[in-house]
Length: 445
Ligand SMILES: Cc1cc2nc3c(=O)[nH]c(=O)nc-3n(C[C@H](O)[C@H](O)[C@H](O)COP(=O)(O)OP(=O)(O)OC[C@H]3O[C@@H](n4cnc5c(N)ncnc54)[C@H](O)[C@@H]3O)c2cc1C
Image (cartoon, rainbow, N blue to C red):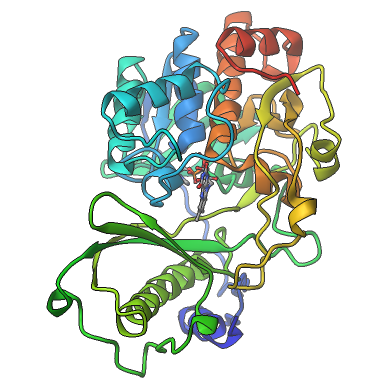
């Protein structure tokens, strides 16, 4: 890819910060420090607080609530679903059966709305948003939307309260157990627990992708072609970034464009990625209209860029790619992965992968409970794409089906710990596994 664009964008954003450098994860030099303190009301008390309402967070909250816990879910956007709704990803990868009752319910509800295609599991993501919302409410989960996790009060590994900020301003949530499903391990990072990101040598994460949607119209109703300048018209197919096109209802397509070399845990870099993503969308759309003569009109772009990989916790166990290759079995298995190693090259915008096609294949594999337990934390688990795994293992385990399983397991464990008056680490892992299996999860490999 052309590094120039990404550097220009990163530098443009950085120039607002004193002493800042350009670059994907440029650490701006601080212009000093300010100490900030303020008393905020403890507005909510819960047994389990889940941070982040993607498919992992929803699954965690639903599972904990089903076990009888009083659960609160914090989501910064207007809808839950994360990558699968706000990110525009509308396709389940991995096995659809044997994921457990939460995922079974999601599927059943999508079917009831006739919102999923059976042959290739493409679904209507606006309907998924409704399905998830209603599942949460039916199970009695307290939902806080437009509410961002900001900070946590933690001592000796135990989190007492989380500080969140919604439209009512900063408030605290007190809970006995916390589950970080933020994708970027926001809660674990705020507490200073160990986290890692990207590939070991330079921290580069798997590329993001921008999702947008077009409608088929009369050519005269398509948008006019781009002018050179801010946008860079694509002349030939070879110049296209990796672009995937698939049907989206009658007379429509969903389109995914790869946007590499940005860091989803860095404010400036993520800003630059969104800007770059929308520009690329216009350039690719223009190519389809002008060169391929497609009568397409932009319908909408996802409100957030799709993030494949953010920051992972360091857990009691880190799942590594060799565990997947060997289909290693764990006594404390609580989830199972069934997707190939989808490791897009972090530094390329073409259809390139870290591994060859043969190397990408792995058998079904198990994920141990220990990889959800945040090292040095007492009452914090992480589920979804921020659980403890190396980059290649995560390239498979990050898919929605597995994230749902991981969330379900964390929710079950949190609720079980509360019942027994202990922390998840103190639980008999065999008991967690048994409950996970009783809830319909198939863990055999
Ligand atoms: C481009 C792309 C294509 C993909 N294609 C597929 C596919 O075809 N099939 C498939 O199964 N999977 C696919 N995936 C993977 C899958 O979509 C995600 O990995 C999975 O949905 C992640 O779920 P999650 O709940 O862990 O994280 P997320 O979906 O990222 O959810 C995290 C949630 O936490 C919220 N949040 C974050 N920070 C905070 C905060 N500080 N306070 C409050 N809320 C916060 C976010 O708003 C979000 O709702 C794809 C991913 C991408 C990016």
